[in-house]
Length: 374
Image 1 (tube, rainbow, N blue to C red):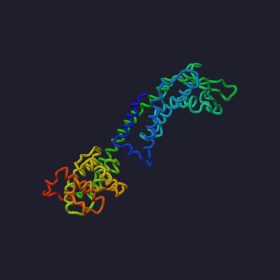
Image 2: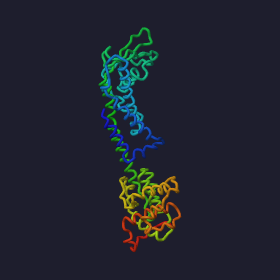
Image 3: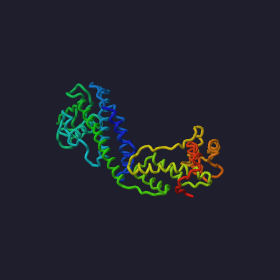
């Protein structure tokens, strides 16, 4: 069994978070949970579906190894069926009429049904079996002996005793290569599921590309539109975070006129990011956004993280250290007048952008007039 296939499948599912976004609430159900469970359990069992782990000896240890082997195939097969139900949205399981694998059947059955019998007799419930082996009345039941190798024709065998005194016991033989082939065929069905994922994602892209996003000349209003669109179209943490930052930067009132000029300069530079987000969401082209240099010196990292915790979460304002920023920005922004921590956050971000781009050189330029919340 090629472990790389489940790794490739997981990578396909996790691309851009789209599968999660589409299926976390699909037809009123959280089918993302099913997908995750199926991937996890395939990951668990795939390495144990290996005939090299098996023995043809007639002893308890060999029997336990066969139980493990068959149980792992059963878990794999159940996971594949669940993925099929999610992505193909029908009640019919794959390979429903396939008879290509098991060549030594005790009775006529599809491969899917015959595997159920093997699972029952060698692993799941060997001491409580319906008699599907002879076509007899369902009232007749069978009970399997211990399983082992060397006492019948197969790689491993079990004797099926009847509860009817006049009925003879039967030998059920299994062949390890056949069981491995059964597992591999179903495991490789992940390739078909990946093709379906590509098709579903393509349809999802096209559907949203054809729905036009509203335009608004007001940057703050445009950001609000994009916040809603991003939530509907992808709900990606990265885009949501970028829009949340822009919302704070463009809607926070600035108290001091000196700071207002610095913030305006910063907001103008960020207009391209609003347009970039608009284009990415409209075209459903989810890529990393271009950045502007509003970075802060390394030794301001702790102080800025504490300020960000207050602005974006439940941080403690007692840990905010304004003095750390004054060392670098004292001549660029006025720290004596701010009303909220959001305002402090914005003037610091704007101040570092001004500092990094040598904004003093363009201080007297005619800045573009953009809408800002007064």
